[in-house]
Image (tube, rainbow, N blue to C red; front, side, top):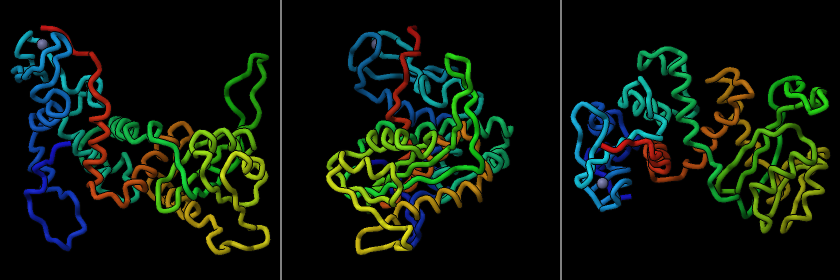
Length: 316
Ligand SMILES: [Zn+2]
């Protein structure tokens, strides 16, 4: 992406801040500025017009959140297909919600957003949920190298699936389990799986870790049978009270679990299974950005750019 002018505001070199509130306000003083930003992302000068196909310039249409093609008059809506589409909340508040989420280390509750921007709790909850959908790592390449894998039960008791199979019987017990896979000094990925059985674990690991990786796990049986598919597999003998043996350990993944569980307990209190993956995506995104030089806010905004407007725009 082209360099942005955001670096023009000086800040103390010793400040940890990467994007201050002042910088935010300077870039996005109102809705118009936010719309102009989205227009630049999706319909900058020279962008091929979806209607006439010419490299066009798009001009602001008064009274609408749209721009029109200089040749055919096609109406381009920069918010179409984005999380902002058809929302009654102003664009600037949306941007500010992203700013808030990006500026906390361990999460921010919908309750807090409700207080900050004066929307209802329901709206605040929906906004954060929408923003989190941008943070999913589903499209990212699989993990590789030295990868620690571990699972952890989520919530107290097991529960029965609500869906019934085609014989009308309730499906077997479901024990929500978090499976975390972490590249040492690299990326993390977490999936909510149905239980800690062999099938569930194998499916998830195979989907997210490349075969040329070296796995580090504990002694759980499901991992033993997984070993054959990988370059190597080292198990730490937790049962024998060994936790670190040279480079054989699962400290990285356990550290990540600590982070997630403390975060969820402290900020969100309890997260229903239905939304849990959504929250996990947020934690993973933060973790994966930890060494990046790109401020978190811009890393999140980048995800909006990756989801270009759907062809929801209408012709003139
Ligand atoms: Zn056109």
